[in-house]
Image (cartoon, rainbow, N blue to C red):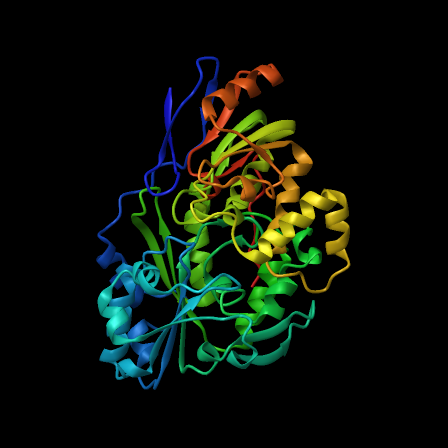
Length: 435
């Protein structure tokens, strides 16, 4: 049996050993949908909780449009130009429109990468496309703190000062915030490092409700809602894509309502009841662009934990073409390897602000508590692999066969899309999103 895993740009054909009884966990087929340009045009005129886009733009002097960075396969090439043309048709000058890349604490996207991210030369040539820099104090406006948990609200002044504020993004499972898209593109997307590092502290990261596909009582989601409320009127275009990167759904409108509409749509295609656990789980890191670093690969380790049996083996395939990730992340991984999981976590629990990028190392502790992690990443150098804290494998079929023999169980779970699919050992009660 051969299964295609999302891996890098080209994918990876995995031929399973004959001893394996594979349970392939995939999304159900999306319903037929209209052409992307028709979906987008319809979303702009039938919004959720707001006036149509053209009416929102009327009388405004400036606009800021947030887009995700290169780590998310958002179909910017489909919607940015029609969105911008709608704004200019209502009188907003092109030189008063900024497309702001919501990098969070990631590196900026520049040159050819920026062109690929935007996907439309017309946009790059006609409006300002700029990166957010979370470490630049002067780029942010201090809006106080959230009332419940005291999270500092410092947001990029380009979105705060714009007359029309629009976030855009991709709605998919997120292993802490429940779902990406919507409010998350604002914070942490264009937030100051103190805001982001508070979100990434242990008091949020270790909270049992800060998990994939859950909005009910999720502290990250609740604080993100408080932050967007502080900004006043914010709108969003949320998109959903299939495994071939085709647009299958989009919703526009008030940032919270339009996001919940997209969550309601995507939930039935991403939360997959499986009904059992497995001693061998094989997954991917979702292919390009998500699997370009080990930093992002950790997401693929966390999402299938509900179906990984205690003491089981989690095997993940990731391109890691760009290596380990940032210097900050490498430093966190080095501490993990040197200290061990328990001492590393103890150090995190004493901090109000997480160090930059160490939160991803903290997330890696979750699968390490359950079982053994094996990584297939042939592009990762020996020096980089030394700080992963997981076991290296050079041949997937052999690793799977060895796991089957070790556990004495031929049943294996295979998740070709990695973190874009959330398998559940037992069905969960429906989440109720807080607003």
